[in-house]
Length: 416
Image 1: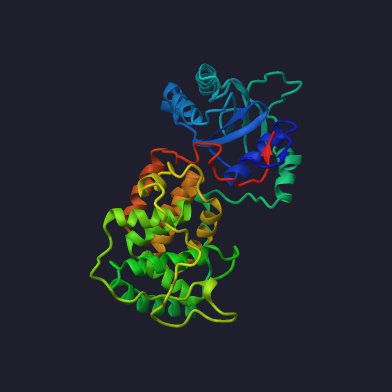
Image 2: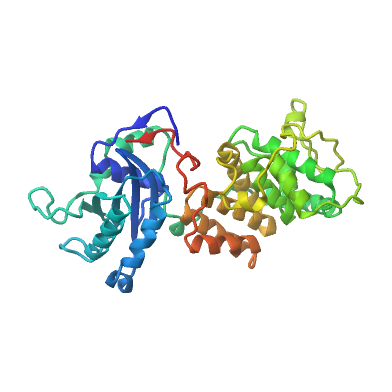
């Protein structure tokens, strides 16, 4: 992130107050590690706390933490916070050996630990202070974190802290029974039309034009039912689903070039493309129509393919290319996919998988796992969700999330 202003950290309460905003929820049973660039906060990493067997020899766990933090190549220090109610109120505590191993590994890697804390539901304290006059047992009230100046400023700037993804249903668009039935009827009509055009280059181009116009709309706007139905139907085609993800992150040239490379087009498929008219081409007050209809779209809003080098699908989906993704489009896509997931079914699973991929790109593994798990509940065996969930469970970082200059700019300010 390279914003023009920054937040001021006045003490440990501010650092600890920043963590839930960075993650989106208050962690529990977690190690949170933050890199430092001089006196600025860098990347935030959350890992489940290890069990007794690992605590008995935490060296491998410490190496894993070191390797993750080393992805922040500018890091010259680290902060650690252990969020748990267990094993720390009586020094040295259950996690003393873990902290020692972490400090040893990070110091050797050029990221010395400058501070470490224990945080429970009610109390928190410095993990390295044993002076009862300044660090009394069990510690200071957690309310001092919630009342910190930085936490207040984050709330003022619009940031919120929600429930942990594993403890609450992730938000989905709400829809009435009648609306759902109407969308599914329209979706079935669009699906029948699109199935006959899977190999059509013109249909693919028309489809991307509509998605471009949708992503260019003002955030939070609800889509008309017929548009929702068409977009859901388009996600039922895996090659088109992948193209939408790639287009949002890397632009239409990458989506088009990848589709050509995969050979999805059939020159013998010459049927006229169908779909709602893109928003940018609609007259004031014009609706999207109510059924499957031919359209004549000129791909308004799409970047032209001018022969320049473009990244492949694999590079984009792993966050390796482009150097910095189009976060504004990915943020917009996440909101659209939220609406598309409301009616469930295979398109709902595709939408949830897309949200899981975006969460992974943002470096929010817990949310990614929750979305991908929901996708597999909706459509057991959904392959892309299975593959993505395996990446998340292995702890694989998205390439963009591993680099500060490319990482999701959730906050406008830096913290210093």
